[in-house]
Structures are given as C-alpha cells and as structure tokens.
Image 1 (cartoon, rainbow, N blue to C red):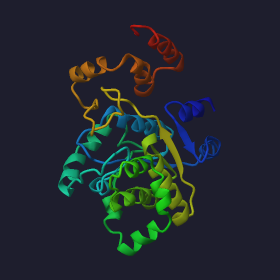
Image 2: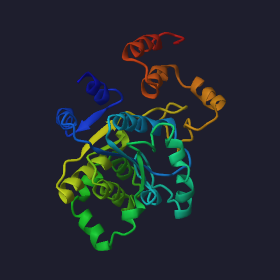
Image 3: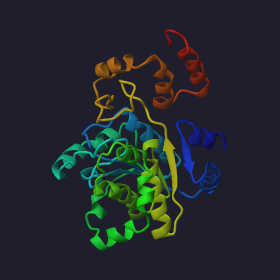
Image 4: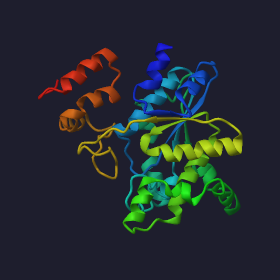
Length: 284
C-alpha cells in the first residue's frame, strides 16, 4: 500500500473518478492498459512531456500494458488548449517528420523491449477511417455548452475572438482514442483534463467500460511559463548535456525543488530537505 501511495500521489494532481476507486482496481492484480498521447507539433520531446512518460514507466514496472500514442491525426487539427487563438494546422508531412524520432527519445524512459514492451500507436490508424456519420454520432454525446465551458473558449468569447468548429472536434477526436485503444487509464497533464474526461465519457458510452484518468502537474519552462514547444522555453530530453545543464542552471530559484521532485527519483525525505533549501536566498 505504501508503494501505491507513492505511485498515486507523487507528481499526481487528480484521479478520476476518485483515487479510492482506482486504488481498488489497481489492487485487484488485473493488468491495466494505460496510455499517454502526444501530438507531434515538434520533433522534440521535452522534460514536460517526460513527466507523464516517467509515470507510465512506473506502471510498466508493475507489469501493466503501456502505449505511447502519437497523435499524428489530431496533430493536424491542433489542440486549442491554453490558446487565445486557433493553432496553425500542420501538414501530414510535417507531422510525419516530427514524429519519426519519438520512439528513440521515449526509449530514454520507457522500455520498448523485453517481456512487457511498451507499444507505439498512431491515431491516424482509426481517426482517418471515421465516416461523417460516425463523427456526427460521436459529437451527439456532447453539447455545445459543455465544449464552451473550456476556459480558453470563454476567454475568446469575452475578447470577441473566433472559435473554429474544428476546435470543438479536437477533444472528441482525442477522446475517441480511448475507445479505439480500449484503455483502462489515460495519463496526461492537467491542461489535458477536459480532453481526457471526454474520452472517459466516450469509453463508457461506446464500450461500456470504466476509464480512469490520472492528471499530472505541469512543469514550467525556462521562462517560468508552462514548458511548451510553442513558447520555445523547453529543455529537450535529447539535448547535449552542456546545453541542458546551462538551461537548468537558468531556471528560477523557486522552481528548483519542483524540478527535483518531478524530474528525479529522489526519496521523499531528500525532497523535503530541498523544499526547505528552496526558501533560502541561494538554494542548493
């Protein structure tokens, strides 16, 4: 139980529908199918992406089935999350080029060999085959009011900025990934909570199955904002050590203990000491 406590609390923001319900499922000794999805908007995987990958590795070490989903189809739509305007869509060629090295980078964290290898999947495999009739049926599970609840859409309405119809379809397409993969758990950052809960609803409605959602805190980048390829404030996991060291040395002092907590396997006692040191003028 202590191990599960660490698994479900360290670098975990929330568990849906509840930690208690998920813990019962986890304690049943049945192997779960778990995935994390990443849109190839850049050829690089950064430390912020590595947080959910590290959580996947914890579950993989327990024997659960792990899938790294590359959103090569949704990547061409563009996730509206945290955007004050619609994203510029990527071409199929751009998405393909960006995703080519993802497995090689993810291998720094996940094991793609051995007795329980992680798998790579691409959501174009099923999304590109959906008919208009099927898309309409998927959309019927949600209302415009539900989709408009998203903060970024409310902000755009307030500022009289347009919302593209295709942006409404994005969470539904991402949600359908859960149905196509028939997963038990999705892991992702708190900024993906809405999209992941859409998948939870679709999994229940279409597969009659409980899908759990585990959200993780977001890691700030070199400028103090959420680490993002769009903000060009990321520390990529395949950067040369000298460049990575230079960027890490430049992060704000108040973020030092958070980086230790989220990016290392240091014990809790050591982290508590680091938290105390982070309150000093020159933390070490």
